[in-house]
Image (cartoon, rainbow, N blue to C red; front, side, top):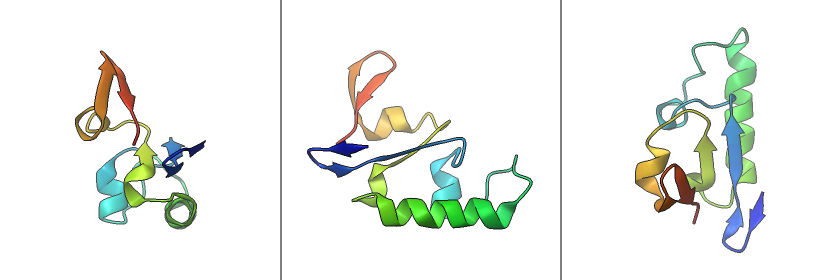
Length: 76
């Protein structure tokens, strides 16, 4: 997704937690860990900033970005 601040990658189920990306670990529920790590590497080439890779299931997203209203954050 392109924004005024740059390209944001909404990783969805390809990256559950920031920990997966930070430690370069595949998600636990994959049948192909090599492909999952390759997808994570690709996300790094697409996102303008590393912090613009948004995992699909990490509650820390709500700590890292400003709250717009309950359950909604502004990615920037």
